Image (cartoon, rainbow, N blue to C red):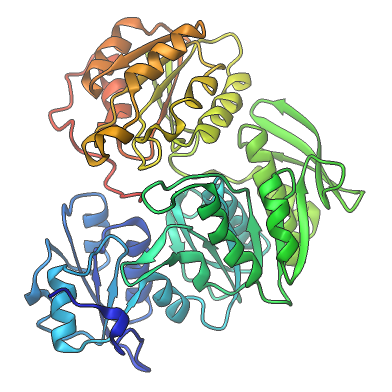
Length: 496
């Protein structure tokens, strides 16, 4: 009979922890936790399925052995604590064994709270879009100001060369994920953090495998907002009507941001001046400063504005914030130029939700004037593989000159009646006058692009997964190199 940890008293963290085992250790955040625990002097082991580079080598280089698959004997050494990842079910062999042995266990957010956030002021960035970029900018602003922050973020920060850091300062930055915590705790991860400052970037429907509809998503954020500590500050996107309803129940100080006249932090005079995006920030009606960032797009200017508000609450002067923003190197897989070959620029982006796809295309377009923009899209998330956005996607590709849509690679995981149709999307785009093509697989897209691309073209590839390493394979083919012999490999990081 599957173990029900909800009835167990062992969901706890002992006072003294010297050895830790992580079940499903190769996710981006779990890998960060493993490294943090190792750096703090603990002995760390882990297990996972499909253990492959770069995460496997990344952990191995740091002295963290990861065993392939799940097995009861992985707990033979009886660790002081077992951290259970959210991809793990109640009937996992190691979960069943830890119950038999009576070992203490916890979720990933519980572990971060105990071993990384204890005694620190937390900056928690939440919302449907922009969490990774906003939290990355906030962490960099704190670092530039000499505050030596800790952080745990769902992307690789180029300024730091990683997605986590154990700093000696008094602040930690969390990307607050609305995804569920663990099989024994179905609440969102962000409910585990008690922020000193929080950012809410907006609320839309997403994560269709967890949430039924927008009301269900909103209820999760309502729990977060209504539980904010009274002495904290919430920086909330005031242009979003859902957010404006949510903040009515917020018990703490609220500072809205956006473009509206009534926002506390207002973005004005946005100008695209490649390689810069420039804007003026007004604080409570008065000019706070003129800022420049290499990040592209109005949405990233708003992300930067929310980080400006966080920095202000932390006492960082506007001049230092501007210096830091100019030096922000970005996050891997967010508008990341992967290379250029035969005059073709290939860009990688994590966009998958319709809003993110639209804003990313709008952001890229003015930075490459007079050049063809080719959008390559893989609907891969649980929400994008469902027909819930079928009627929305055709409206978001307008800035592109050519659109290539891949058949979702994991469509079989969705009930037939609920499945998204890539073929229909291509047809709907054609009816809107767009040059759009459907492709059953990645190799067909590459072959088409190699024949169709010309010097000066910009290829924007959007997916929340590795997309069969399409970026490097396309660049190699454009350089005249032979095809990749291992096209099935992804970037090695899982993004739930």
